Image (cartoon, rainbow, N blue to C red; front, side, top):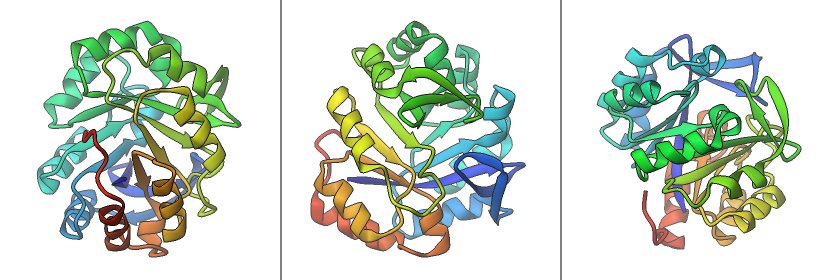
Length: 246
């Protein structure tokens, strides 16, 4: 299982939200690039960045900060938040971002997402943020009537790199992942599934790895020290590297 330390950006700072609620913000650093360097120093070989301002404004916003993160980290970065057009894709890729996460746009126009996957093979990641199993959009401010598993099935034949699955009820709550929902997603699609939200302890990470989870994004638990990156990477070394490496 691969590990992505998370860096969520709001107003140029590194923050974490609870359940995607912008009113429940905790600021962890005013220097996200320094945070990126520290995760890499501890062994991270990839990072997950979310442009929370971009998610609200429906366009990438924190370009300067993201470029500093990419430059400081020197490892592949995946970015989500506000990416809704091919122009946006070209922009974020020009910043040095390796993978772009498409969420809200995937619900609105899945055929476009498939076209972009063919245009940029293995560089597009499907971002499925779910509330009670249904896709949430607009920076998690709205919930659709489409099941996350159905949307994954709809686009899985395109050359997408992976699907990031986030259970909003678990995100930032330090209460553990939604293992059942993740199992359902893995059963529903042939795409590699990256688990996001809720990982708090090493035992929970072990359970994800044992279940064959491709990768996990870990945020608040790392920042608050309930688990260390070294522990997670050590676990993953024991479990072995997935056959398909992004």
